[in-house]
Structures are given as structure tokens and as C-alpha cells.
Length: 180
Image 1 (spheres, one colour):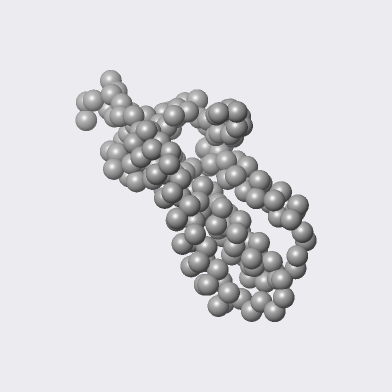
Image 2: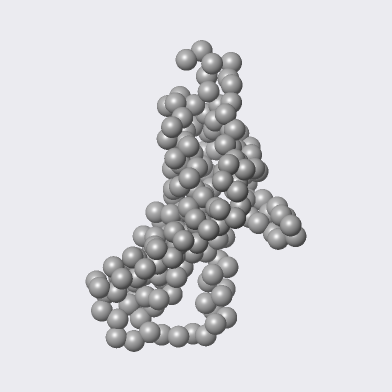
């Protein structure tokens, strides 16, 4: 027998407050990340390709972010669906998991985009220093998106080890075994 605890970050913190925390965290991340990388990587010139490729890259970061959420689940043989849902006429891509998953897999899936995209951007900056500002901005956007994931992970860490996680569009449910 399972009982559940509902976690909805938007309901708990509010959309505006979450957006402010996310933007502030992204700005701090940008400052630290760019200063760190620019002190390691010697940049003599910056290649510029115009605004259109830059904006296309900005739109691709959230798409890759959501796809990377699904990859650990797919690698474990579970099903995860990429679903487009409209919220206030804005299409948003979701990684929806129709079944319960373990706490460990949920934490891995939540943090996977942050780790992978940040490592790819660091590697790209080292291998191609003339694109350092682009890589830094893309990593910053990803970090801003990952703030929500990090808040979810803090809730997951507090859950019992044997709990199962059930995905919902408005958040997730932590299923607790009533016997334990």
C-alpha cells in the first residue's frame, strides 16, 4: 500500500518567484563561469556569425535539455515521452514518464541535462576559444532551466530511499510505502 506526497514547485514558490530565482542564479552562474573559463582559455578573437544562428542556438538549448531528461530513463529500459503542451498559448516541451520510477533514476534524470550540457560547453570552450561567449551563454541558459530541476532534487533527496516517483504535468508525486 502506498501513500503519496505531492510536490509542485510552482504552487509552492509561485511562478514569479521561481523566475526571479532562476534568472538571478543564471546571471551569477554566467559571471562565475565566464570569469573562470576566460582565465583558463586564452581568447584572442571572437568569431561572430550574426544574430540568427545565436537565437537558433538559444531555442535549441531547452529542446536538448528536455531530451537529455529522457535519456537516462530510456537507457534503463523505461518509457518516457516527449510531449508538447500549450500553457497560455505558449508551446512547452515536456519529458513525461507514464510509469513510476525509482528515486535514484529520477535524481539522475533531473540532473543529467545540467551535467552533460555544462561539460559539453566547457569542452567546446577549451577546444574552440573563439566561441567562448556563445558557449558561456548557452551554458547559462541551461543552468537557468536547471534551477527548477535542482529544487526538485532537493525534495527527492529528502524522500525515503525506497520511495517511487510518479510524474505529473504539474509536478510529481513521491509514493511512500505505508508498511515502512
